[in-house]
Image (cartoon, rainbow, N blue to C red; front, side):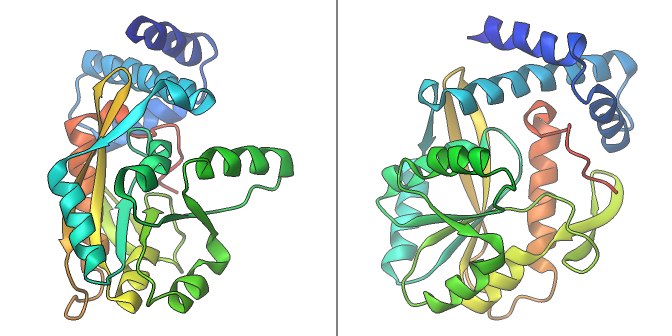
Length: 255
């Protein structure tokens, strides 16, 4: 599969030049000390990773996701205590693979999503995301639902690296740039007194992703404003610097 990813990535990036300028500009701004030759290599690596992402979205059966026994034990312990768990992730690795979590954990798992205007594609995406037991919460109704079901503990996934706008954001420095980070997960975590986890997806091989989890906070009772958001942003930044190819550089993150 490696050669397939390589070839398809070349077509997407170099032939069709899908958002090529956006990718190069984002990499240059986020990693300003990178030499020109290294920047070219990082750009090519991104498109190779993006090609893999495209294949796995079209044919999700070709790949799987794993959890360590330690992380599985943590999820089961916290859920057994009757507590809600929030996992905050970015567009890093193949985030769509997390729809398999209900099978791995035997715990109710849900994720926020924004319904698409195109009803056909919305139906297709919802089918793919829910086929393994993941529950989708429309973002505009999510907080109301989460508060209503507060006493029925679940795992809730937030993808939180989009540009949130000024009203829904907290000021941070992210990849050498002053910007705003989405603070919805933090606000929700405080209302639920949830156990908050950062999730990082790394490829073990061409067909397997490993989800590694790191606790941001075990209780939100004494957490100051912005602490969770800043911690998540820093952890995501560390993941990106470790392997830049896994992040979605084609997204216009800084506005």
